[in-house]
Image (cartoon, rainbow, N blue to C red; front, side):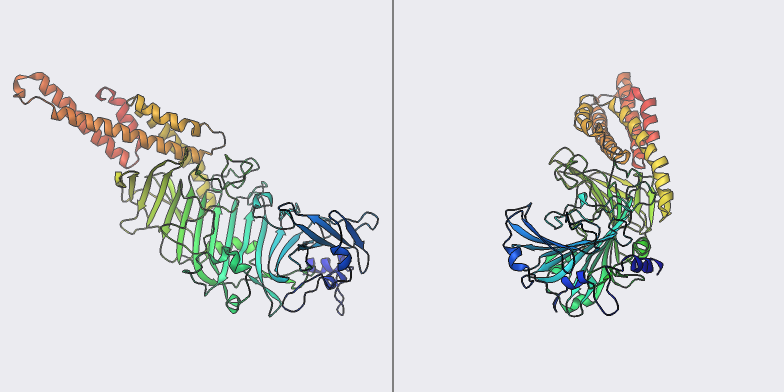
Length: 597
């Protein structure tokens, strides 16, 4: 209330009295049905005859500019109508600004409005606090993007030709901020939640970089998962004509992502590796969701979960199904990150679920499938819980019954295999890992470990991050490096071939410790496969090639037989230790039995 009173005091010239609407709002007032045209304006004939690059200034009822501009993208032209809402335009040097001016855009031009970009400087400090971007179809208002500048830098949407071209890397997902979309109801002249409502970014450690992001997918509760599985991300739907089902909107999906390794910074922006994908049909009804902005053109009240409530809702959302994602490494065969940093392939939206295997509606995209771990829980849950498994030294979704990692596309198009995880006794923890051969589709090896000493973290994200970064991750890297070094001694050229492929990836400066661990896991797994194949095969050949004569009369036969069998026993011990990820023991067995190999 205090902020609203301050706004009213500061903006007396801008705001309407109880009996009268402000001039800047009357100028852009829509006809019934949300129609806005400019070909009936008294200045239209002069405006449409402007030459490219020409402009004209109007001073009644307030300062306005009309320009004819060339589209940056394409060969077209547009009329841009700039309205000085806050009365600070210099009449001697008139030009628009981005604090409280409005830009009405007619592509064509044909007198029919296509876009409106409006900046709102609520506290009049010359820095915009809100921004909206309205979309018209044949002059009819269909929907709008709204932005809220919560970090005080005035940066929200990056537009080209007064339009959002889908590159939000150039906008502001880098600190505390929120954007959201609303659908216009022409029958009631009001806004309704639709599509991404909101996209909320959080800088929880106040270092200037977002370390958590949540996206709510708003869609009619009656939408068809068969016909419109990604309704909330369909332009055909959110920019299409209005229909009655839009009056019963739900939060159908929440994507909730984290920077667990705490590397998010200017140097490592958008550094999310862990995320939840949650689906249900929850009516869009939340405390504080009606946001009335007096300086907005009608309708003045938008609908969105407040930024301060987003995390609370995401943490307690009553999901029917939960997907868990961990970004292990990039996919070299596709580029979905910021185009100016091709070796840093991370999305501003967080980490995505997939459209394969376990389909979850309104997931969105673009999706990376390779080198991303997926875990799925087909059971209701009203809280997010994770645990640490000492078997694969990873964070997992508690309650997930299955999971997989498609391994490949590290050096190009090659596919290397897959790792699958299962909870076979329904206790909430994975107990079976299958390492799948790319060619045969069958497991190369299986680790079956029940009653492992898993560590539960619930949703204590700070405790999880501290443990993972300070204990689990460094220990995993150390164990990998020691075991790889020991295995390498017994592999020769075979190891060199693997190292040649992985060395350039491991040498890249931009990879994180978590990504390095993933690569080392793969090198270790390759080395162990080669070691196991080589020495199990060699032992089998030796035992089967012993002469058929009576060994009592040939001491060498008995000696060779015993030596080969000792190695077979040792290999069994090594394999048992490796299966439960006791890499210290594997390394020790190799070191103390070097003469056996």
